[in-house]
Amino acid sequence: MKIKSLLLLTILSLLSFSAFAEIVNLNKSDAATFQHYLKGIGQKKAENIVKYRTEHKEFKTIEEIMEVKGIGEGIFNKIKKDLSLTEGVTTVPAKKDGKNKATRKTDSNNAEIQKGKLKKEGAAKAIEPKKKS
Image 1 (cartoon, helix red, strand yellow):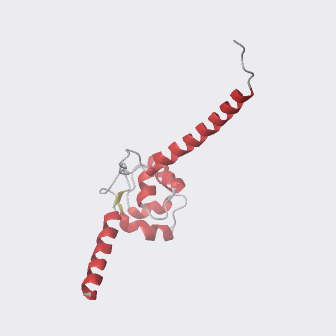
Image 2 (tube, rainbow, N blue to C red):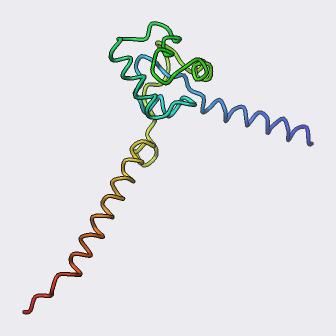
C-alpha cells in the first residue's frame, strides 16, 4: 500500500510541475509574460528583453537573448528550455478576478496612495472649524 501511495504522490507532483512549465514566445511575449513564466527574470530584465527586441527586430536565435542587458550565460541556461522563437505563450493569463499579478500590484499601490489622501483629507476636515447655522 505504501508503494501505491508513493507512486501516486510522484505522479501527481510531476503533473503539477508540468502544469506550470510553459514555453514562452521570445518574439511576441510582453514583459509581464517573461516575468511571470521565466525563473530569474524580474521586471527590469523583462523590460530589457522587450526593449532589445524592439530595437533589433525579432530574435534570430534563442541564444541571442544573452545580448540583453542583465541576461548572461547562467540565466540563459536556466530559461533556454522554456523559450521558443515561434511557439508558446505571449501573455499572462487573467486571474479569476480578471487581474493578473502585475495589475494587482499596481492596484495595491494606488490603494495605498488613496489611503494617504483620505487620511490627509480626514485630518484637514477635523481641523476645519464648524460652521454655525
